[in-house]
Structures are given as C-alpha cells and as structure tokens.
Image (tube, rainbow, N blue to C red; front, side, top):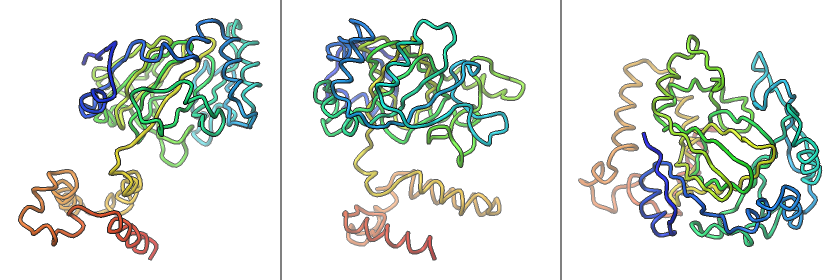
Length: 332
C-alpha cells in the first residue's frame, strides 16, 4: 500500500473525497502558518512561552517512564499494571522538565496526553484553527520527549497536526486486528486496547502473524506543520522522535453515532454471543450481516416506510426510546 501525500486541500474536498475513502493521507505543510508552529521553529523556549500564554495553570494528567523503558509506555511484566507512573502536574513543570533534559542521552520519558485545549488552554484553537474542520471540533495537545505509544485505534476520525518535533506513525487497516495481537480490554495504558508486539524487537515466534500486519502497514514521517488524516478505527503506532514534541489532534465522529456508542454494542455482543453454540453464533452472524452490516435499504425495501420500525429512518425521539428500552433490558 502507498500512503498518499497532498500539499493542498480544502474542507469540501476533505469531507467529500478524503474522509469517505477511509485511507490515510499526509497533508504536507497544512498547519505551517500556525503561530504555534512558527514559535516552535524559533526555539523550544519560544514554543513553551507561546503555549504558556494560554495555560490556565491547572493540574493535567502526566505520564513518566523510567529511562530503562526506552520511551515505551506499556504494561509491566505480568500485565497487572504499567511500566510508567501517572499523576497530576502543571504544564509549566512539564515544560521545565523537557527543557532541562533535552540534551540528556537517556532521560526519563514524559508524556502529557490528550489535553483538551478548551479547558486547559482556551483560545489556542481559535489562534491555531484547522481550516478543514468545523470550529466546534476541539484541538487536543500531546506534549513530550522521545516516546513510543503502542499500536491502538480510536473510535473517531482523526486529524493529527505536528506543531514541533517529529513523529512517525505506522498505520494498519482495521482488518489487521488479528495480526497485531491485541491486549486486554479491562486494563489499558490510555483507554484503547493496544498491540502487545514490540515494534523495535518483534518476537515472530510468539507473534508470527505480525509479519503479515507489516505487509499491510503504511508509514508516515511528519515534520512541523504536517498533518495526517487517520481514518476511523485505523490502528496506529506512534513514535515521537525529537527531544521536544508537540502535536495537536482533532477527533470527530459521524452524526449518526449520536444514536449510541458502537463500542458499547460491541461489548454487549461479546457478552451475549461469544459463548453461544457455533450454530447459534453462525445464525446470529447471518442476521447481523443482513440487518446491521448489509444494505439497510434492501433489508426493508419490501415494507412501507411507516412500518419499518427500528430498521427505518429513526427520528431523535425514536432513537431515544430505543436506548431507554435497551437500558431497561440490559439491567433487567
């Protein structure tokens, strides 16, 4: 697979052609005019001074890993916890740490992840706007030094913009799930499930299918001002390559997902279907394929529009009634 690169795009083309195609795309220089990117080009100190001008001096969840981990934020040896510490810290403390350790050969790893700018740095999004997205889509900041984030996926469309430093994304389509050896759902380093494979030293005896995942992978190397579109539920492994790295990203979902969270439906399906006899699961798979994943219009075309019920075009009120019914049945 070849990763597409573009140097010019507008919002209509982005939403009309790029997003529906569901393939990653690099947009070179998309945000190079941002004041934040310009400050980073001047110096790390100038960038942190610029970000500090928006900072509300609130405590923000911050991850710190020992030098021995080599920047990899992951599990401990027996999967009962993690190989890093998590606690609250103000951004200024993180900035001071990064500046003090940027020349160290093997410093502790620091990651300030998914900082909602509307809360912690109000005004940043207005000063550094994404011209591809509605202004209501909030920018989130990811700040740290050299770090490795395991392959994971998010239930969102994602536009990732490098403000400072360099990042390497290794991307996999959703179909690679069986080749990435995903870890437990109940305990995760940052919310999403992650791949258990070490990309630096993959154990192909233990994880033989990972070789097939690599064949399907795409690699994006991003410099300041570059942006990467990561489609919904695409797996991505992220490596921060510089002593100081700042990224802004935007998550958004299609309007239809206001009806409910697909992940909740997935978890309930695991609970309700996985333990059924093979023949029963096969029968339910046929029904799911027909009613959920197939052509919805074809499944109901033989019925009058006003008699299609939950398979028809649900109004917001009808969707809310169905959610209440599901809630009652699940809890009963």
